[in-house]
Length: 220
Image 1 (cartoon, rainbow, N blue to C red):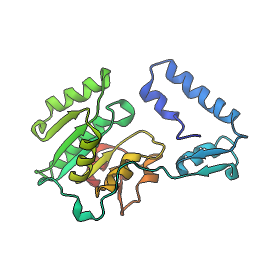
Image 2 (image 1 turned 120 degrees about the vertical axis):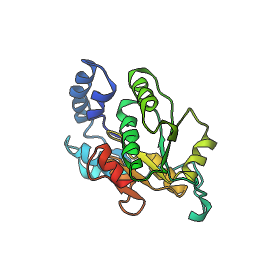
Image 3 (image 1 turned 90 degrees about the horizontal axis):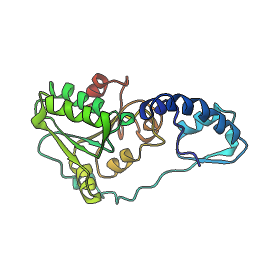
């Protein structure tokens, strides 16, 4: 079972030289397993495996399920009065939370009433950098950091926000996109593995033309 390969994530989540060692060793052990039958969750991961000489007929893609009950109709999603962006998930480098905040700030210059809610725990240098950026933002009063939230609160946010943003370096699928869609909320995402699978571009969300905050803001 491969949800995803790490690849460039090593350089976002690990320190030197562990990141370089992991990056070099991953293709070796992945290649060593190439004769096995494989289950994976996206076409992006399948393409990754094909690069390491896996046989296409031995790779089976199955859909990820969600535990959230979808709303019956879009009108059931009662949105906040002001257009609201949602950043959901752990605050760590590979999730690029800071890119999402910068995209919000850029978009807010054209949508003055825009607001943002950030839900997710974090720690360490990157978390502190994100918190410092929020504190120093010109739009600090329109950014609400919620920290850890319950499952019930997560579902409420997914229903009430207008857009969920995802700017990960790489994903296996991007389950929060599917979950948010089930609650009547489209996504704006970076064009990376997993997210280009979970978003049906121009239907369930928008895939940014470039992977930077300005392009994400244009999608918003």
